[in-house]
Each structure stands twice: as C-alpha cells, then as structure tokens.
Image (cartoon, rainbow, N blue to C red):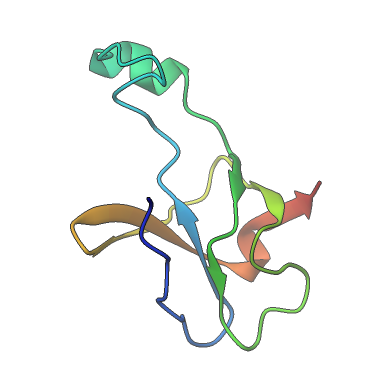
Amino acid sequence: MAKEFTFKPFGAWIVVPRPDKKKTESGIILDDATARQLQTNIVEVLAVGPQVSQCEKGDKIMVDPNTEAMLIHIDEVQYLFVNEFQVLGKF
C-alpha cells in the first residue's frame, strides 16, 4: 500500500511527481537516454499551496516543458515543486 502524501506547500507552489522514470511498470530498468525520451510534462497534482486557484490535488496538468522546477526530497522520494504560473492548463 502506497504511503499517503501529506506534505502541504505554502503560497502558489504545486507538488508533482518527478516525470522521468528509471523503471517501467513491468520492471524493465531504463538507461538515462531512454528515460529522458519517455519524460512527459503532463503530471498529476499531489499537493497545492493555499494561493493556488486554478488546480487542485488529483488534477492532471501540463507544465511548461521549458520551465525549471525545484527538486525536493520527501521521505527519500524525489518530487518537483512548480509555481502555478508554470502550469499551462489541466485536463
């Protein structure tokens, strides 16, 4: 059972999973070049700060692919912090 994500960001920050995968769902380990090719800018929102007005936890969003996100570590797992202005839209 996956551990519930309980971190709450401040301001207009949004927490999303790191989009690059080193392992497929079937367990195949990918090299760095292949992992970069499979990277996506469509991610699910894990948590939002109180000033975020356009999306909420659980939404699928498209983040600007040219944006620089802040890499954070919570419970030994890597996540990305993006600001709301870096979100292009949601599905």
